[in-house]
Amino acid sequence: MDKILIHGGHPLSGSIKVSGSKNSSLPILAATLLTREPCIVHRVPDLSDTHYMLQILIHLGAQVERASGTVTVAAENVQSVAPYDVVRKMRASVCVLGPLLGRCKEATVSMPGGCVIGDRPIDLHLKGFEALGAAVRVEGGNIKVFAPKLTGAVINLRGKFGPTVLGTDNVMMAAVLAEGTTVIEGAAQEPEVVDLANFLTKMGAKIEGAGTRRMIIEGVRQLHGVEHDIIPDRIEAGTFLVAGAIAGKEVTIKRVNPEHVRAITDALARCGLPIDVKDDAISILPNGDASALELTTEPYPGFPTDMQAQMCALLSTTDGISVITENIFPQRYMHVAELKRMGAHVDLEGATAVIQGVDHLFGAPVMASDLRASAALVLAGLKADGITEVSRVYHIDRGYERLDEKLGELGAQIERVKEA
Ligand code: EPZ
Image 1 (cartoon, rainbow, N blue to C red):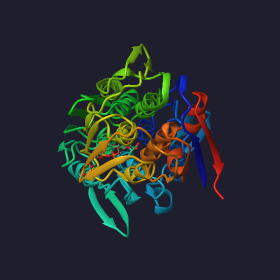
Image 2 (cartoon, helix red, strand yellow):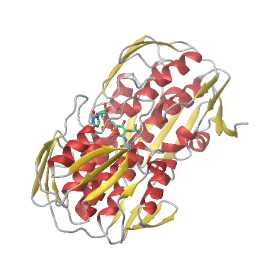
Image 3 (cartoon, rainbow, N blue to C red):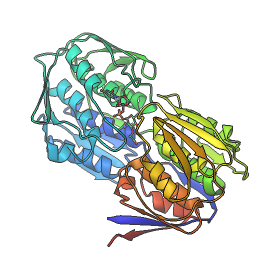
Image 4 (cartoon, protein in one colour):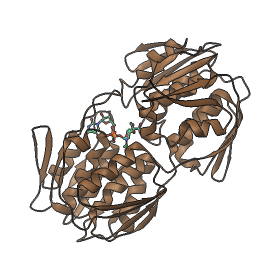
């Protein structure tokens, strides 16, 4: 296993290009199962999560070719069973259920494991499938869905923590080949859901209301192959903006959609950090006197839970008392214990973190636990006095393309070493 060493205190400057979105790539790669014809997807980031998804598609019988960021998938003949040893590596594998149900009218997929950010139920996914006429059974750790035919229905996908992103994706991918009209109330509005809807529409699906809480899907008989560019990764963009906020002189993020990161740039501006937006580039120009902040994570277009850990790192070194409330995954605070090892003052009260900013963080050996918590520890290391050693960086490689190299290109003193 690799680890990343960061020598703190070196200012960042310059620009980086944002990669294609991980959370858009995964459902769109799954959606290629909905047609026998080849689909060509550009700007698929080179991550272990996208690698796992391609392995699953191959296991299901698709022909897959990858040439740098372009992936071609031809799912001429597919089988509908995705076993534990492929699914267990990535819980987002659950998003092959919808396309397999749509294409094959049946699917068997291993139950996704939980993960450190909290329980990851899929009850809303299954509720959507049942509303479309599927029988759902959970046996031997597998989810089995089966439908002689799929019939459009009115489905409310809102859960107690709000809309479900992959649940909306899954139900959408089954409904596009159902007979009749499906209405999804309480749909997720994330840009990645819209990117999937655009991909399906290009394939011949009939979808209205993508990006709103109410989607209307007119089922069609079949879908055809397409070519598509994945949208930029708004969470990678936000992570680099926070890197600039923590350790930057002037950092510019290129090939980003400013609308998709508005909640993030608004939060940074509320900290008093000057942000400059020009077309598809955003610059952050720290002036050294960022201020404390109250922040609540919400479904899009609110502040994204996937940026909560990174903001925790920034606010740990920002004067004053900040308060973060995590409404999506209330347990998503694995990064706090590690930040405290670096000298941060953070008190957890349920889903709320109260952060007393400190003048200095101190480099220390810390352990990555989940994708975004790991990124937060690297960001904290940029500012900390001394050397921070982040172990188990495979968590980072799941969702960030060359994070350490890109930070190095901005001037960070950062190196990846093999862990003995
Ligand atoms: C997606 O996960 C993202 N992953 C997550 O990003 C992101 O944190 C999350 O959406 C929220 O924005 C991908 O897109 C691959 P949800 P998803 O269903 O779809 C509850 C990252 O770091 N819920 O929107 O699995 C759930 O427990 C990852 O890139 C139910 O109760 O999340 C949570 O509290 C981490 N029942 C809330 O809804 C269900 O059936 C939102 O979850 C489904 C979800």
